[in-house]
Length: 347
Ligand code: PMV
Image (cartoon, rainbow, N blue to C red; front, side, top):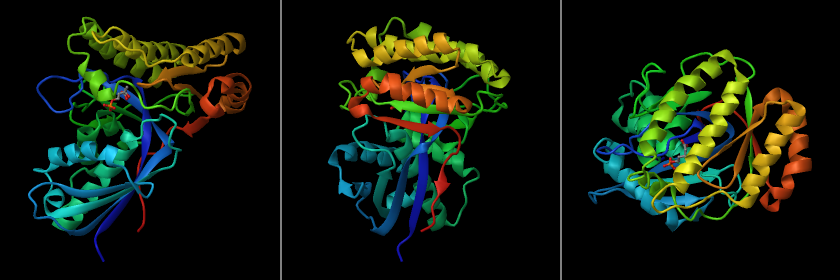
């Protein structure tokens, strides 16, 4: 029987955003970030070691939902090249990778965080199996590897909230890997939901890789990095005290700062669409009218993430279905709890 490892790894949504890389390293963040793990949106990935590899370079095959997707292969190859020196399993075997996402294609949801998280876990697991040596901290090692595939992926390895990037706010925080947020999270922030409102499912005109690079030469970048450092302190306090008003102000401002950086780049661009803004306005109105603590955040795309404490699930689902679905492509939205991290699957 060939050796095989299968892991399920969730996606994550950043509250304080990673946007911009440090110079002079590989995938090091210019500022710290914090995210919530989205337990219901995940990738499940298996790697099978079918045969050896003596080619002197990474060898792999990749299937997504049972089909070859050549568009993903350059990113996987670049990832395997980065970890080549570190891992025997990559040097000695052909990796047959099969991945499925539990959320539909064509929703514009970035699957790379979940995908690289799961891939890194399978690789660590197989490395342990072939060398017979256990990693001191498998999650941390997998987080470090996942970072080399897609920066934000390194935060998907932990349940609850994860922090990536040097900051005095969280003990042990590092640019190399993410760590769990180290303070208790008070109600009602300890049980947030994320409803992802699908505004656009087209491929982005400007990829995240290009977006990060455009921070170089952006005159606002130093101020943005300083704001993110400050927001880490403020969000840590808000989470710890359960201060929802302050939490909302930081989360929404972070989302808009992310998009402001795109608009202020030398090659400026806008990823929000008219329906993104319409939904944001509806959320603000709903919050004003009902007093319920709902808020939005954005990724590098047009979709809106509507965050809210689980206790208001019924009211918020009703709000989405009556007021927001008209702005969603094909009336699509996906709802996830926050919480659980990756899980190893039985073969
Ligand atoms: O991980 P990347 O390189 O795809 O960067 C994505 C960064 C954002 O999703 C926009 C923000 C974040 O911190 O996740």
